[in-house]
Length: 306
View 1 (cartoon, rainbow, N blue to C red):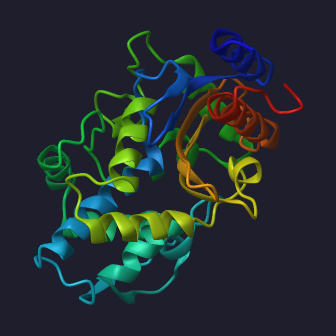
View 2: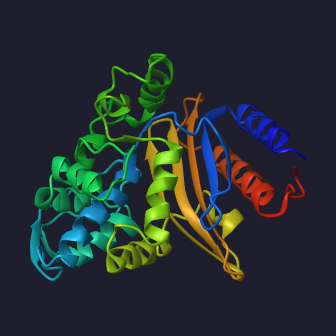
View 3: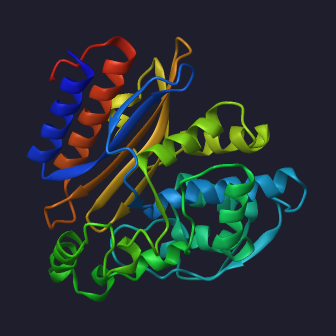
């Protein structure tokens, strides 16, 4: 099957699941890739925690930040479903920078991420990316801003209204009345930008080797395994990733390292047109689409369901 047919099949799968999105898969050694809508920017949601980790660890590598430094963190006291870690703590805690980094990256803890943003503000993270010549990922706001969408202002019985607003109010230029969904105001990045970022972490680049190694380990310990992991993790491959969720948006970016030495970076950014919080079928379709692109690139074939 040709690459054109694979992409067409992928788009059809997404449409049948009530999704649209941007996908990119790249062989990290040859540079060969396959995808679609790869340069369309999306709000980054929790994917911003990866460039945050880069900025923190680069300062550690330069001796500017002590990873053992204790940080006093106020409790998140969040009771709505979704957030994890310190976000749900009810009492203050004292945690080291390095442990905050684990909570932010591997557990996707927003309160831990904002404790790190207190040390390195978004503008400084963006400057670090420019220094490293990592382009296309915009860092403009703290993670706590993601917990101030219409969904948090409505009761649990009305969350679908927030999703309806998120789905229906976008402009053709990716603007949005909800600031967290407006790519000109929010943290943002395209499928290509996130694959480029992963490429700099998995292969030699301007990023310090100890920074890259630690981020690979943190992404390998990602606790959120419900999206792409079922189709990429096996005894013969290691799946390392970061997920992101914001209203109707569901993302995952990561790298599959195969036992034969080949590695593929994957970015799956999707938006649903279904106003519902729980969509396990959508997440299964994300994995199907990402795996179909990966398999075509790796072997020239589709998996059995293709």
